[in-house]
Amino acid sequence: MATTCVEEVLPPVLDSTSDQPPLFDGTTRLYISYSCPFAQRVWITRNYKGLQEQIKLVPLNLQNRPAWYKEKVYPGNKVPALEHNNKVIGESLDLIKYVDSNFGGPSLCPDGPGKREFAEELISYTDTFIRIVYTSFKGDPAKEVGATFDHLETALHKFDDGPFFLGQFSLVDIASIPFVEKFQIFLSEVWKYDITAGRPKLAAWIEVLSKTIQLCGVIVMVPLGSSTIILVILILLQELNKIGAYKQTKCDPKVVVEAYTKLFLVILL
Image (cartoon, rainbow, N blue to C red):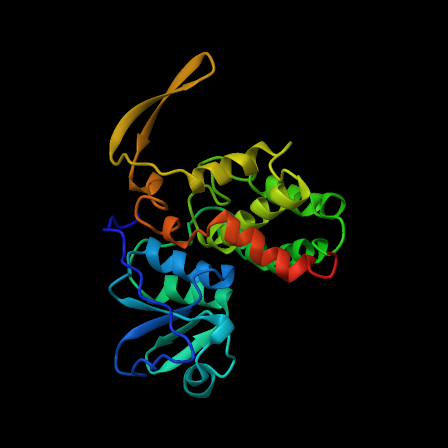
């Protein structure tokens, strides 16, 4: 289960005028950009596992990034990057697995028949998913992205022991949600395309991930049509917004639209 915590006060963004934090002084640091979906993957993982004290955030201004970041910290000059045990490693999909395996907190790799294999398949698919959707922004997304979101809808039908890809919240959800969130905003606002239309599982997944659930360890009555079910709401259903695992990483929709318009539509305007 996720660790309940007070919402974190986020550190200020560092730019080309900022001094470099100490390197390899025993502090574990996660270098990110607050708006980068790749970095948000690792940020969410860190938050969900309750590692705010063990892994310190170092947010960077990617439009005016410090020279010392490439020269002394991470030659790849990208985010995210993790400083841990006298080394700096990158690549978001590798890092979410690394943080899950090398730090305490709840596991993000649920056990169960076929779950680990399916997790690897879906995590690998995220690169294809992202590439197809990004490419569609320079064409006609309404005609080009349907199959990719259908793939997510089908995947969400595989396990019925929870609303997430593997039933329980996992690295698969973390690998996907920063991008799905932004794609949903941009496709709806600019292209009037609803990614949840005809995809009830995807709609429910986004709703669960986006909703602030304030109850913990209680029983509530939830009406479903003519029947009522009893749900035991544990910290698992608080896990994102309430503890800040996902909530603090979310971007302002206006910022998403403006950024994606500059990135993908400037040639078309």
